[in-house]
Amino acid sequence: MQDVTDLAFMGLVARRSPPDFFVTEYFRVYAGSRLDPEILRSITENDTGRPVFAQLIGESIPECCRIIGELYRYAIAGIDLNLGCPAPRVYRKQVGGGLLREPEVVDRLLGSLREAIPTRFTVKMRLGFEDTRHFETLIGLMAKHCVDQVTIHGRTVRDRYQGPVQYGLIGEAVARLPCPVLVNGDVISPMQAVRVQQQTGAAGVMIGRGAVRNPWIFGQIRQVLGGDIPKPVPLSEVYTYIRELYGVIARPGSTELNRVNALKKYLNFIGLGLDGDGAFLRQVRPVKTQEQLWQVCDQFLTGDRVLPWEPSPPSVSTSALISV
Ligand SMILES: Cc1cc2nc3c(=O)[nH]c(=O)nc-3n(C[C@H](O)[C@H](O)[C@H](O)COP(=O)(O)O)c2cc1C
Image (cartoon, rainbow, N blue to C red):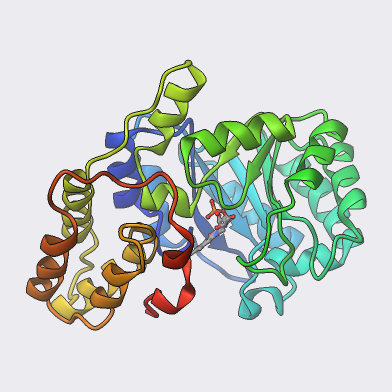
């Protein structure tokens, strides 16, 4: 996740419950692009004990092949192609989710990347651009080019992050594809992760925002799969996690206000469901100093309460979210 799941974040998750693998933030590929040094650190300094895939976003075949050559100087598990980013400034350049409008372009890109990638080639995609009219064709292309794994966020680009996730269509892709399919979108609790995996027949789940909110989720999923009842996390541990995050997000030269604002990006996800009506997020929104921030945390993140498995509906309201 861009600007969220960097090296420091990967470390915090891995110390709590490592996923089977990580995927970097995307490397933007265009004429003359260089490997972003900060993103590269999540490969060169990866000490999580888990493999990391390098994600690319781009459409130029020669440029993607050049960057792939550069990435294979480092210890990557493979290359993941982003076919899902819904940010208008990205898809307007006909990359990420924008490519889902043009299956012929995807066909050529997948064919060339398959030849250029010596190890595992994976794809992260959505159901389509504005609707699902090309979904079947796109899934056929994944099979044609022997992609090693496909992760499907069960929404269109136009849906962005709103509306129901169409797990049924992901199930159809699972039935058609010879490679493993990972189900993605709105997985928030370990029980639900196992439920959607079973419902779709997918090989696994990819979790984004749910893992920022609950970095213990991968271990909890393993507990559910093992037939155990997962252990909920005390809010005091969530507080420790937030303090650790604050400690690692500093960039050279960043001010206290920069750090507080950077932390709010994570708190948007962590804060969901901490209390019944979004009061935590509302109170965090105006804070400007770490002292004010810890005052709000002291109020909400102590005592015997545990992190609820799922946010209750009122606290999911976007009106409580912090714009950063
Ligand atoms: C802030 C943010 C940044 C994201 N950056 C990326 C990215 O760089 N690459 C990618 O494949 N998906 C990215 N995504 C999409 C997520 O990987 C995921 O597909 C989406 O959030 C749905 O899954 P979730 O409900 O588990 O978060 C991003 C999502 C968010 C909210």
